[in-house]
Length: 233
Image 1 (cartoon, rainbow, N blue to C red):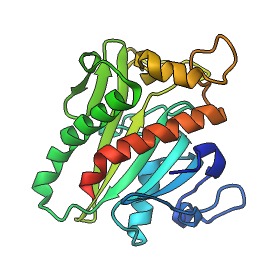
Image 2 (image 1 turned 30 degrees about the horizontal axis):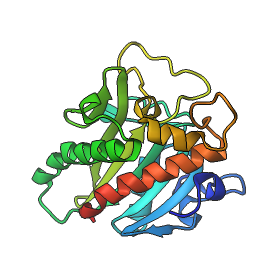
Image 3 (image 1 turned 45 degrees about the vertical axis):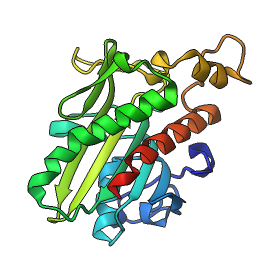
């Protein structure tokens, strides 16, 4: 992806809900090619998983991706709420595996391992600092960095939803003590932080959630993760 989320983001709605000027159909959002992926980027949506599911029902190909800067009804495993304020990377993509459904659950920890590798490579994180919590979470000592959910439907489709806590949001996320969020930038090495600080106001450690600099940082991470997952397509 060449354009940042801030450059091309538009609101999205369900395909069947009727487009409006404020929130057009996700199907009407232009898709940008990145390797084998076709990426639609929106500013806010209810759930990127739901968006991809609807694209799939309309005939979208494997590798279709929807990315949102913010979700209003994001969900994780067991349909638990995944709070999705600005500052995180939230995206879903479509797979048409072409294999027995009995084999699909094994994709979950494998995808988590790939995302972990992408986080380590992109941010320069010490590999010993983050780990996969089976079947599909990525955690560190501070809390949960990433959640992944797979949803199968129509007998031959799998939607993979990924949410990464990247930048601290403007308002802290309050939890019940489970799945306390941790943020990838807090584990980044000095080289990444130094590059992120270039041109930013003095005293700021990393981009502020919701700014163009933050959108650019999230785009870079998206490309790193999709690059790691390209073997799935």
